[in-house]
Figure 1 (cartoon, helix red, strand yellow):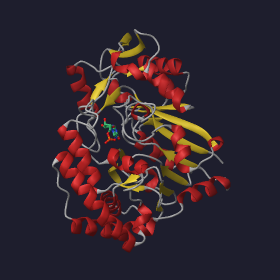
Figure 2: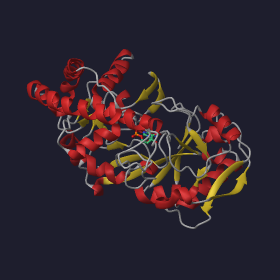
Figure 3: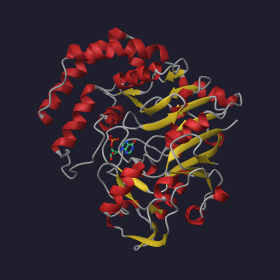
Length: 422
Ligand code: IMP
């Protein structure tokens, strides 16, 4: 039986959490987080309450679903435990949470380095001033993963003695480097040891051979859902580099980081918001004028789920959406926040770029053309069928389908599970 992949096809924050939460309740044996770390924030409203998940997969609310944190994720142990505690407080079972021993751990020096770089506003190359990261240490952690010498993986927590010996050595070298580069001091070695040893007690019981669980499930005909983090335009290879995150966020990465055979993937759902948002620095061609942006930010509560930063808001960018569908081999689109966009009048849409085909290498120099305005459709209230949507809303969706050659199969018109048209 096949695997389904859900990825964001904009700059993150497309509403993947709600879509995965809904799918997880429709017969998936396992939900797998395959990349990113607690830079991600999936907001979910359901019968258990309102949650902002950062590391735990969104299938956790279904007690029958295996929830897997795979090797491509970078895990900050203390943040994971905080999240686990919040779930336990609301009686959500964690018995089916499984963590790959191969997943790398975010260490205190990664966070200090991220802050040091972002706040000082320089990098060793001197060519970048600011990426606007979430300051969660994600980039430096992936750097150490690729560097190999000073990296820690979740599985290292199993043998406390060897973990502590390595921790001491790496701590000394990182503390010196951070002091020299950014004048930043780390928490004391004793505090770091205490933090990670305490974490190990909670995390080690969840360690499992996750990739084999996934492959076995597929072999026995069970459904597996891979949950993406961030969005395609933040992918380190396919996004608006260098203003991207440091991992791969696209559907192909889901196979690479889980060991799933690409031919087992039958559905690739691209989640897109009816408009676009972005946090952090970098090109954002279709940004709205400040007054409209302010309005939609308030209607749509467009503040980062992880950092609380106000998101920049823009008009839907069809050429970039087409690019993202292409790169991910999207088989269907889930369109979110149609209820929010409808309050603007007129609604604009970017149909093409003056320079021709969208080119990620020079996106900052490209000029979007905002064409064919549509009247806002207003409240969508109790509407639960596509055919009953106001004409302008239907036209808007048809434009997306025509530009991307992809069907919009899910339309979200509110945060609750039942505020969805499928
Ligand atoms: P980092 O992932 O913290 O290194 O941040 C790099 C860039 O990715 C910044 O522009 C962040 O704002 C952005 N980013 C990272 N995670 C998310 C997310 O979950 N949603 C939206 N933007 C994100």
